[in-house]
Image (cartoon, rainbow, N blue to C red; front, side):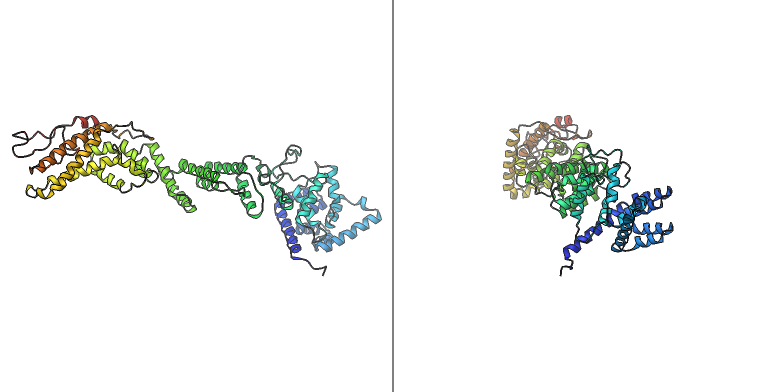
Length: 539
């Protein structure tokens, strides 16, 4: 029938009650202060009204009972419909008898509030705004309690309060941090954040940035930390949106704060969030991704940050690619002069950059000092070569050429240890190696050495050998290798030491037979290489 309450009406009634409870909790400190102030000045009815205006009926009833007003205490403790009927009856009695003008203001405020009327409060605020000591949330809470039936909704209360503000009958919804002196209604246009949320619920025409703007909840106008979380919550439950510019403003501000606080991993998370509620374009998403990557590049430092691995695990679980962390480590090593560390990390990011560093800084020094370790290193890199890096690997002055050269040296060394009686079985291999040596010699002789281009510092202990010196040594060694292979083709013996960059002098370092190629004896071995001496290496 007509007396039945629909589910929507019941839900709206619950929303109103929940809002009343929330306002009571928010106003608890202000209410307690007002009660204490009234009690200190001896205003019993003022303290009862202060408790009622804050929604604390139990406190108001207790004060009334302790002050010798048991009937008033009982009326306050009664349910709202009963209390309202008692208050209406008493007010009618005072009005008909003409005693209303003689009743103390404190008692009138109590009875008018309990009757559901805000006329006294409206008149007091309109007559003297500066002395009206109740903030907008207590005033709004009183209006919620003054509802006459269950059909009233939060939207209707908000619209009613807006009308009261326009008519000068209710306090403006200024933020809690603003006092009566510093708030200028004509200048400060930002209302309290909570009131902005209520207006958005009532009218659905508010821009999200207007709701979450920092002046609505903090004196620091550039502190967007609370705005970030508030906007994330509002977007999930409403249709509020915000433009990309303001979205970026909030995210950048929060990210900067988090980095300053040392929580840069959360800054990465915040940067990848879109809080405006709108769909993002691919360029916008890419820009945010680069911004998040830059935060990692600047702050990820396993050598100085004991929590670096935990931060990395958190971000990788979130979906951040591990290659970002290797790149960050690579450029940190580059800044610290750690060439080996740079190559070890950058090879997971760009194999071509790793090869360029190998060619310019590591291979020249390492090859002259330890060809065996150089071959192991290049073997490892050869297994990684794919796609685009293949061309760089195969270029004449690249790592691939050095790799083939070292393999050739190793194979010739193995052949030099074969007995003369068995050397004929390796005839085909000898011809193959001779062809390889010739092709390598032709390739190296035509190399144009570009100036090294390192994007990093280098350790002062690192021997930066000129690459033209390196290839000069390689040409000399190849000449010796070809002569040795020629001797093997003639089935003549060789020196046991293979002609490598470590033990070859700049003269012939082996003999071809007992009487030698030149008739009698071998050329003296162990002579210093002028080029190797120039590079600072021992032979």
